[in-house]
Amino acid sequence: MDRNKLTILATADLHYNIGRSREPTEALARRVCATRADALVLAGDTAGADWEALRDCLTLFAPFRGRKLLVPGNHCLWCQGQEDSMTRYRQTLPAVAAEADFSVLDHEPVTIGRVGLAGSVGWYDYSFRQRSLGIPLEFYRAKVAPGAAAYYSEHRTLVARHAEQLTDAHYDITARWMDGQHIRLPITDEQFVAQLADSLADQLSDLAARVDRIAVFMHHLPFEQLVPRARPAKFQFAAAYMGSAKLGQVLSAEPKVRYVVCGHSHWPARQRVGHIHAINIGSTYTEKHLEILEMDA
Ligand SMILES: [Fe+2]
Ligand SMILES: [Fe+2]
Image (cartoon, rainbow, N blue to C red; front, side):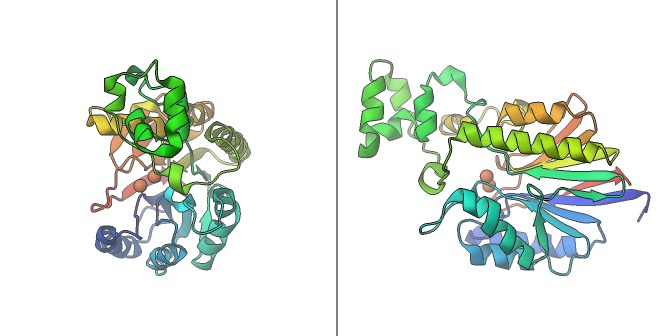
């Protein structure tokens, strides 16, 4: 191994709580543990609401000798019982991760040599919504497309408020974004994105004073160029929940950011966005991908 280079392994969307994700995750973990890489980053959706599934997944990486890092995904912030997502994000998840020697990049950026590693769950503010669908913003905030809103009684008033604008084509879109059922945040999605953008900007300026190169790991997508194109209609509504342009602006403003690696869409992508190599890992429920970053130490 070239000691003038750092090797950073990254994967995402292991979804270890889902049966068909288990065997491919275990195969990926064996592959990771056989390397002598300097760091491993799990870029979100490692498991779901169930803490035991997360513990079991993180334990698969126990033999790995490098730094063990993660950022949460939206599924990692799904709640059970009386939990709320902000407490999971700020307290419970970091504590569970620490039991397995993982630290959460959102709260603790890392330097290795002259390289800085920063991270964020990222989130969505509907800036990537497909405007050609013509769905009013209020439906995105409620996380239901008009066809689904018409079906569920709790959204009857939402449909009534927009009835004059809605067409048959709108009612044909029956998707829901399930964070609407499982995420409990005390602030709006737009406010959460604003908080995350401030925190990421602070991390980057702090790291930039101390390192030459920065890699950022984010669950949601920071650039519209990474949003999957030409997918079936039922996925078009979901584009709104892929990420936020505001977080991309924070990355683009820091010249030392070399890479951003994300997940979430389950759709691989590689794009050069200005000075940044943007990579979507693209793991699916049954196929887990490993990205190997080599950076000058
Ligand atoms: Fe996922
Ligand atoms: Fe996700």
